Image (cartoon, rainbow, N blue to C red; front, top):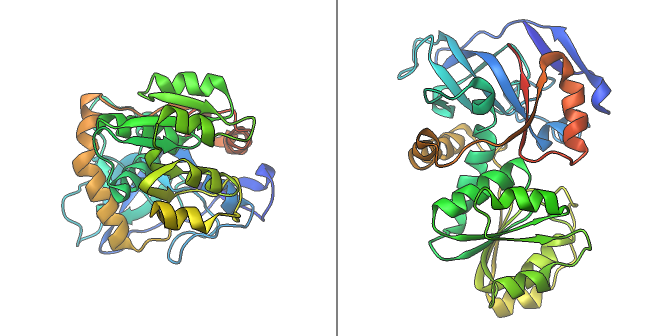
Length: 325
């Protein structure tokens, strides 16, 4: 089969399309013929040598989410059959024509949803839904979402609106904030100037109840300043940096809770639980058209390096997807 291989740590040019052995599913696995996959920032880090795949996943073939058709099923697999249209998450290996995975990390693609649209769903919607569940977001609460124009951001704003909560999104461009309003964002704050806490507090008087932080770094202290008493922060990404200088006194006075989360490093049972919860709560909304994947651009398989370059440019709104067949 053809697969995209990280030939060595480095820029997008180190990604090479090679012929490699087609994987064979084990007794509890199935094989998917990949039609499309999403490109995520974790893939960029893996390409740079900064985020290795977890044990048991392909180490040189990146890719965390996919959509395709089941073409081989292990004897111990139940509930899936050859020919099923599926989408799901993996620890790595989605940048290929075939991959092997567990059935409990897949969901069926609803009728009428194309493979490219489906490939933009699993990683970001499972991540966003899991984050909002951990934050226990309820109707009427203000929720702050950083990088609202990202894949996870566009998923989170829709899921927040579906819960009857109110989203304040941040971005460095007014154009992305305008597009996020179309997805249900209540209010937006441009962070190009650096400071944003005062603007958020003016919108959500008394502070926000919860925050989804996809940035980390120096943004974390300002996020803390935005919180209402007993506010909850979940740290999902570190694109602004791995270190932050924070005021612990504010955390104590406001009785804040800060939690970190990452989907990729969870064990199979934890991933299966996250996918199951997503399937129960989010898939009916996708099937009804209440929420949807947001795709900025679709690249061809041989253009994967260009897809990485585009995602790194921060110009995209929503997802970048690569079409395999």
